[in-house]
Length: 439
Image (cartoon, rainbow, N blue to C red):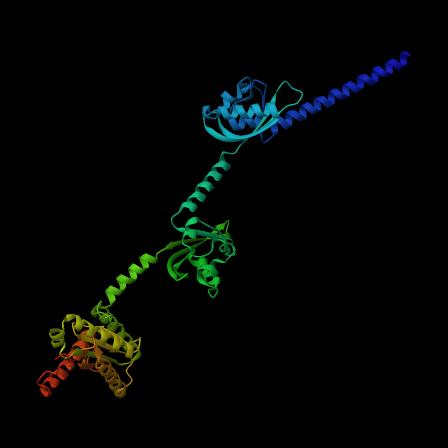
């Protein structure tokens, strides 16, 4: 019996020693996990006083364990403006066993950081809570920056959209939809090339430009429901570690500006009354024509036209009728000549026509007859007045008669005056340029 009791005692001692070793191992393992965890582990009692503080907590907050122990975690780590919130979070952990939060905290250097907390009630204790914290200041700043940029994109005055690496649209801001270019439900998934430029536009054209210029910039005209809009478009490729990630497009509605520029351009290039080119633009055209003629060896014909009896028409019928006469002649000339020919209102009742690539005498004669026919076209004003205009026409050739613009114009002008002088010699009395059935 004694031997049995001794055996049991020995077994119990050995078992106790084994349990103690396991307990010590578990405690060591716990301490290792507790201190080596990449997350701050802080144990607080039911009064929120710190009783354990691991090495990661020292790294994040800056205080040593001995400095932190015994401190109220709320007063110690939490800014005053966030303390009520944190108190409610810890109370929730005490009541429900778990609570989560994100809040501001102080460090040893009095710096403000932003942490994510997970608080768990420790079972078998007198209300102790394990508080686990991660410093997410950097990631939160990134999120805040992304949110700011997102808000900026949404509130931007210009329309902005971005695509994936293959050019398919993934996002468009509100300003884009305000352009009313398309049904909002049909934007996403469309290719940026197809949407902005049409199927015939090859996207590889843009990709080639991106490799050299890093961006594409141009003007796009879109027609939607009987409305035409002109857009200034900039497309930029976005890379991450030399890998193409997306394309970002900025669209600005320049319809009004484009219309204004077109109007200004028209006013600077064309005569406001007749729609023919003005003198300045004609000289520029003539200069370019002479440059081409020098290269190609072609001849240029310049016709100088002066309407006959124009002053008499103004005096007899008024300047409004005279304006109609000028407008009609300009229109008739433009309808009978080629688009490549230049028609200019040179002065009050004077026109200049420039013909390039003259083929020969027959060509020159045909052009003169065409001009005469257009000018002599009757112009009905109303039921009682029809104008029958005529003109004196002089012609000069480059390079036969002159080698520069001014000399060519003067030569054609002189030829016109010879024609007008001959007309006056043959017809000393002015011939009325209109039929007035009231007289």
